[in-house]
Image (cartoon, rainbow, N blue to C red; front, side, top):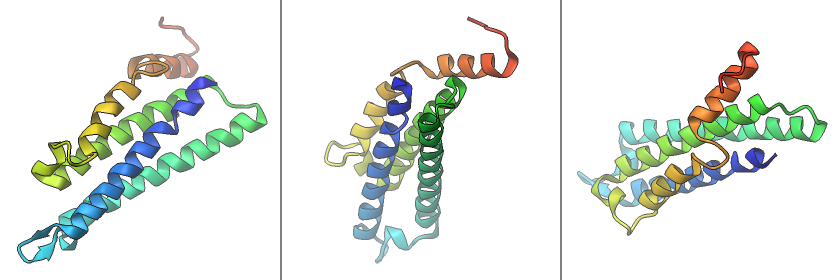
Length: 143
């Protein structure tokens, strides 16, 4: 049950990173244009939004299963693993979009990236979740 709550945290961090990337890319002028006016920035931002939306939908569905009493450990492990990995990737993309500013404490991107490295271990590391999923898929306990 605790793992279900953990699945939401990375989404919040990813949204904060997307917001920061959006604000920065709109305000930062490069070659007489906002960074947001470049194709590469728009593609990165769209990909970030897609991954966040899919993670939100995953956890909303998981909540429905929880409310119905049919949520399985495998489903929670999949959501936590997916959402943590998604948020770490988005924090990295945000830092990339911010360039050198992305690794300074002036921007929250680096803080989110560091926090997410610890969130991935709450309620089990990626390996633990992979083993839970593997056990559910195969019916064989590997640990």
